[in-house]
Length: 231
Image (cartoon, rainbow, N blue to C red; front, top):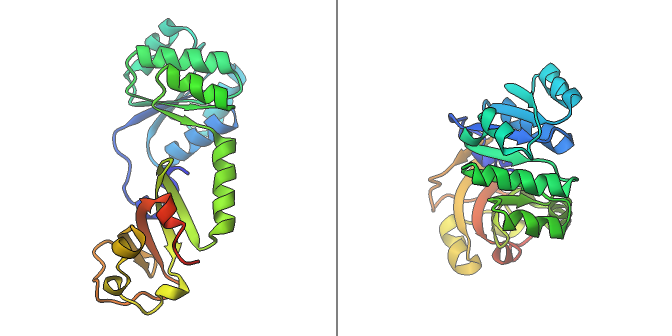
């Protein structure tokens, strides 16, 4: 899950960061549209002119270019090495994806996020320096399984393979109890970040006020500890 989809973070606002998405298939288009709608400046890149023209017509990017991302000179000339974050969304073309990722890291891009289509692809992208590798099919499968096992969890943001931030409905077992009484850190190994009441998050929630079933809380901790929460 993208951090922007966790409602607790929706009001952080856009900074001056600039992004590029290389590969304008479904994944790349979705990344461009989401970032553009959040107010970021986004450059769309693809070797297919039709895809470039389509994202411009749909107005989901700030700029778009047709170029071969396996050519370092083309990336440099386009100024892509100067951007904060580049998303490599060429998931179904392993060689092009790996070479592009290598070019970006050697060109000095601080953060390269790359899409993988297999476990081997994941390993190759990490070997050439990708800062984050996304394997959508695997992650979606894990997300669906978790949502089925814990329907009370509304949103989840994975910090790493072992730790997450989650927003969940107040369990029936917690209804009417105060934060102090629950002792989340001692009993569950979790830290409370916020309580949502009337669609507004309270970060400094008084420890003596009682939680109400039907509202939600945001906690951070290990996935093992989150899984121990009552449903």
